[in-house]
Length: 337
Image (tube, rainbow, N blue to C red; front, side):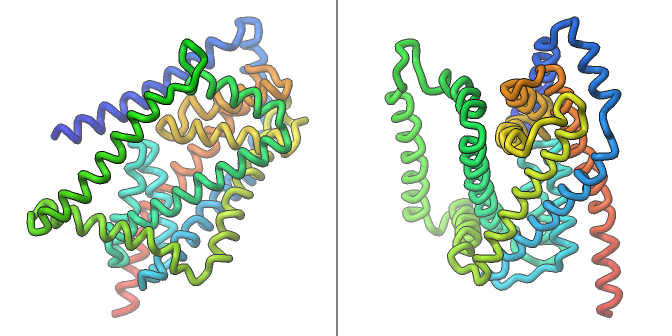
């Protein structure tokens, strides 16, 4: 019960953060610029949402193919439609509760494909690790193509986190955090070794073993090249989708693909820190585009439109996938009989 309440409070906090960023962004728009903001949305080229819809859906499909590659070393080859449906339902769940989708798509695939959920959790961790690396590479590309823009804005965001009132890096605080993490890891290992027959410890050990097997799948990949190609395609499609999205509003249509890379880099951070990126995604894109010479109100209008496009994609394809999952598997079962 305590864990449930903690999850609820955690979700409310980040949802509140997202709504605060929406309100804060609105406050950044001067009263005389409100007309430009509304006009930008009213005159937007909404037809461009169609190719964005197709491009982002394709990226989600490729993500499901990449996930299958991680399952193969463990001896599992689930059907592609089930993997894709599970991925989209996971995205849908994340709109409601952050990170719930990661667990839900594992349990859904475990239900329909008989793949152990604990092993799938390990593959999800591998995926997230590669996504972090990919996002880091996007930042590097953004720095190379727009050093003045990205460097200046990143400096503004990170400076308060790493400096104290004396303008020094807080090594003592960082040391405490590292010590606590090491203490938790070492303590867990000692408990597992000392109490191997305890029921709770035994269940926990099996979960860790399953997760570790999932993580170890990366070393046994038979299609490492294809895995990298899929990863490149996923993020390449994200960049193209963001680039096309810039053409949707008049105030941002003159920006090039370099601005799209920068917008994607910081927008992705917004997608991480609030549920579904609400508030944060549009705000970060607006601030990046502002560094590119676009008024905040126009950048926020474009960011809002791009966030809405992603939200609609997950909503529509997610609900369709939720409905198709039982239908598809019932059909497969009927045909096999």
